Structure formats: structure tokens, C-alpha cells
Length: 627
Image (cartoon, rainbow, N blue to C red; front, side, top):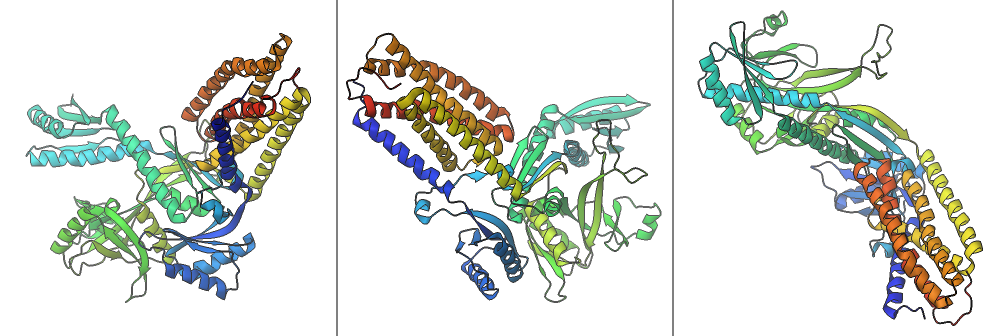
């Protein structure tokens, strides 16, 4: 007789109940909602929740629930029309220090929340939003590193009292240091080599000049590129968080590219403006000893650089940077209580605060300037005003560096860890500048090379079509199995339905993101899952034809088909894991659902289906099987 011990039946029942429990939240859909979050220095509190509720009640906007967690206040509504009105009302009531984002929140009942049962995420192609593919300028990374090393080499040679003619950053890459004789060059090479291990140093003699050529080692370049990519991903993540986007996706693609997906965002212009800008601040002392007008005519004094104020006036600043945006740990917009003009309050790290305190203490009565630096990538236009294309058909880009002195006030007293920047034109400018500084400067310029927008209606169409494809495929297989294998076919249909429930449950438990290729993976899994039952049933038929008893045929069918099913599924699982490991974006989505489906189908086809078979036929003495 084919019988399972009691514990196996209990195990199968428990797994089925848990699968149904964690798949259930996906049936309840989502509620339109707004999500309120504060800037880094402003925390959500009970007062924030009370202000939101008061603003909505005064505007007579009905809402389902208003909840607060550690980071956000979430308010649910009946429809999107009320949601849009509520966003405008709440934003006006709370001001610019809070981010109010549109969102869709799961309508899962509270009793399911007690089990931590949540619906799976929907990808950009199903929910709608914005997709950016960004290229990191790795040449700028190496150039910036070489400029830093050039400063280090000057410091090393000054410390060692080694005389040199000039240190030059070459346009094609590398650093050249010129000396008057080879003995001095040898001393410099030894001193630099002792302190800097990342450089290749080569002697060059040309036209009576003694040159020491320095270049970064290959492993050092790789490390600089890797760090720049990681830093950019961190900064982009911070900026996305400041925008208040729910469930963003920021992934590395290859060695030089980053994918950013913002579900629910439709304002591409604002997203591009915040994500693509490479902005930072540099603080320098004003050169008050020389005339900026004379510098405009080409007579820029040594150790100084000519800049322009926001109104176009020339100003001379000293080349030496006191500290930069890298030392800023927080930045918040606000208003000056005396002049009632917009400002940005800056908080420095320990190093920046020590430098600020020392420099301003020594220069009371003198002027210090804040230089805003931004790198922009623009299309190169021809005489006809149209973008110029290269040989591959891509638009030729021009990189433009904007350097602008925001303010250059007189130092009235010694400054420390906190101070404020004045001279801003508007509240919006103060908000944008504080957001960029707070999120962290990008380690290297980035360029958006691909941009896609998926509307909510198109996302819903994708969901409907994907769901319809699964239903049609599932129904066709169920009808075929029931007709061809009769009672055993119905068992296979039940196992197939259970497999679909388990796939959704696993996606929900791990909070995986379901995409359109993921739906294709589920549909493929449905076909593969029934294939295991076909192998088992055909083996049972073969055993019956060979004259074995029904009970012996069932036992032999499951046991002999197991190795074939395991081999087929393991090889497919290996292929799916390779797709997940080396693929990106849509390929990963396909690989995830395929891998989960393979594992769950092994359980449903071999364990659950046999358990049901044993319940129906295991205790019966039969002459023939309904197969």
C-alpha cells in the first residue's frame, strides 16, 4: 500500500496553509496614498501627523487612515483625485522642509500584518515610473586623482626641500615634473616613491630637460573607478530618498554604468535635474591685494584665480581651497531672521570644523567666498541648431563646468562647525542646493544616456495582459491534463495551482520585485511543473502495461521518474542561476521567478501530488487505475 506517515501529511498541510497565507495579501490591491518625510535634520513626530490631519480636515478631504512610523507619515485615500488634492494641501501646510510624495500602499488587512504578510513589489514596467541609465565619466575620476597626487607631490618635495621647475598635469593623462638636473630628479623620485605607492615613476630626458613622469598603476586606477561608482550609487540613493520615492531601484550595470528606476515618478524633468547634477561647494579666501579688473585683461597674479559673482562682477580668489563639499555633513534651507532672505545652514565634519575655526580666526575682517561648482553635459549643436551626431549615430556631448561665487562676505568673527550661506536668489534655489549638499557630491560626473517613462495606464495594461496570459496558459494545461490523465490529471491540476500559490508566496515573503519578464518566467514554470507530472504518469502507465499491480505501478512511477525530474530541474536551475548572476534588469527578473518556480514545482509535483495520490488510492485494492 502507498501511504505517507502522519507527520508528512501534517507537513504538507502546514506548508499549504503558510503558502496561502503569504500569497493572500496580493489579492487586496493598493490604496492611493501620500507619504510625508522630513529632510535629514527634521524628524517626523506626532506634531507632524497632527498638522497633516488638521490640513486635510480644513480642506474637507476625506482619508481612510493616517499612520506614522519612524521615518514617514502615510495617509491613504479612496481615489487618485483626492490623493492629488491632498498632496498640494499638505505640501503647502508643512512647507519646503518636508517631502510629500505620491505613493501606492498595500491595502492588506491588519490581521495579515500581524504575520508580516505583505504583497510583492511591482516593477517599473507594471507600476509605471521613470527609468534612467547613467554613464559615469571614469576619465574625470582618473584626472581628479592625478590632480590630487600632483598636490601631494608638491607637498612632498617642499617638505624634503627638493627644488623643481614645474609640476604639470598632462592633457593625455599622467603628471610631469621638471628639474634642472638628474641628481635632484633622483632625490625627488625616491622621496615620492617612499610616500606614494600607487604611482609608476619613469625618467625622461628631452632637449636638455630632466623630467620625472608619473602615472597611476592599473590596479590603482581600477580601485579609483570602483570607489567612484560606489560613491555615486550612494549619493544617488541619498538624492532619491530626499525626493521621497518609494521602492527605488539603484543598480550597477557593468563597470561604468548605473541603472536608476523610480516607480510612481512621472515628473522626469525634476528627477533628471536632481539626479544628474554634479554640484559641490569650495570655500576660498578672497585675494584683496590685487585688482580683479586687471586680472580680466590677462594679468592674473600667481596663486590666484579669476571668478565671477552671480551678477557677473569679477572677483579674485586664492587658489588654495580651505575646505569643500566633502566636509559637509548636513545642509538645511531656511530664512535669515534679520534680512528675511533665503539661506542654507551648513554643518561641517570634525576636520572641516577645525580648518574653518583656524582659518576664520586668523582672517577676521577679511572676505571668504563660497564657490558653487556644477558639471553639466549638453548636446553639441551645429550651425542649423540641431544636435551633432558621431559616427555611431550618438549625440556628441559637451561637458561644461560652471563655477560661480554665491557669496563672499566679510568674516565678522571666528566660525566653527556651523555657519550659513547667504546670497541665494530664491527659496527653491536654497532647497535644491541644500538637497544636493546633504545627499553628498558625486565622485564623478554622470550622464543620462538612456531615459524611459512608463505611464501608470501602460503599467496596468501590462499587468492585465500578463495575468491574462497566465490564466489562459494555466486553463489550457488544466483541461488537457484532466482529459488525458483523468483523475490523475486532476491531481496534477491541483498541484499546478498549489505551485502558482507557492511562487507568489515566496516572492511576497522575500519582497521580490515582479516584472513583465518575471511573469514570463512564471508562465514557463507552469509548463515545466506539469512536465514533471507527465513524466510520473507516463511511467505509471508503463508499469501498468508491464503487468504490475496498481499500487506497485504508483510506487514505481514516482520512484523511477524522480531521478529524471531532478536532473532536468537541476540543470535548468543552474542555467537560471547563471542568468541571475550575470544578467541585468529584465534578465534577473526572469531568472528569479524561474528559479523559485523550479524549486516549488519539485515540491508540488513530487511531494504534494504524491501525498494526494496516496490519500485517494493508497488504502484501496484496485484492479485498474483512472489514468
